[in-house]
Length: 433
Ligand code: ADP
Ligand code: ZN
Image (cartoon, rainbow, N blue to C red):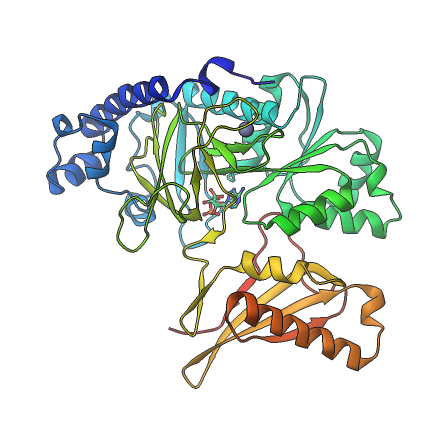
């Protein structure tokens, strides 16, 4: 099933013609209504008349998170407050939050794109959606909520927290779909098991999970422990919120970007040049239809690859690969670039390790050090010390072999590391640079 058959399956040329038309419109609008863009385009000596094809957009300057900060809170809005019906802010993982606004039309578009995402995951109006994304300034909660209602499904507005109560609701209301971060899905599985609930026999059949990077191995673990299909949803407040891209249940090979509303590019973060399809780069988005807060060539810092081959689901929309990390999350350990999700992949490939870990980066005598703390399962933890040491050695060796970095590994007791209701915080950087 495809929610918006017409727009999700447009032939490439038709889609690109539509994108170009919408791009010209949004450029006109931001140039004349947002002082920041007039200055930015003038400084880069690009006139709107220079943009004659879609590729010409590469001449436009990037917009960065810093630009949003400098114009905090409403400086980049392209609509008067009287037309804005909603404000959200990013969770502010780093520094001041980013504030975003929506007109009624923006909320409608967002709801429809979320409904598209749910349909791509196989949901219908007969589904019950357990929404454990946080409601509030974070976009996850309300984004999912409006989308599920738009589809006609029944939403349970759980929000984050009260994990025991969530498990009761999962048992009693029988939701068929769950929306939350992947780390919280695992936490629910763990807490449920602890309460003696058979988490595999719940009515849940699909998880629509996102808002943080997660590995394929983590996906397998969630699917196994909750007996669901775990599908990936991507978005960011600046561009809209969740529902910018969604993995389809048929292809399961990357997330379809809703390109009739967003143009996606992938660039080399060092040079800003567009990289060829299939190569890893930083994703850059341009919004085509947003009224309140359009963004032109916004650098997300999210690293991924774009894939244009056709997908078995019938959608013609470009796919982005699972995010491998954020360029600002990338750890540089003695010159080697490592993403936490790569470490996660190695850890979860080893029997007896739990998907709960912490990475502690420090500096000793001007050299970076990386310590990995990872939980082991109950039965392994009760083994003799030598057995534990062997596992530590094995992890160190695997990480050295796969990623080329030297690490110190410490196995810790089951359930001793912090758990997260929203986005997991796994890196502790003690270096003072
Ligand atoms: P922030 O975390 O910067 O405060 P948001 O709450 O808007 O802001 O989160 C957006 C970010 O969350 C994205 O830029 C990306 O790094 C991450 N994210 C969202 N969905 C996914 C996903 N499916 N996989 C990996 N990362 C994701
Ligand atoms: Zn598909």
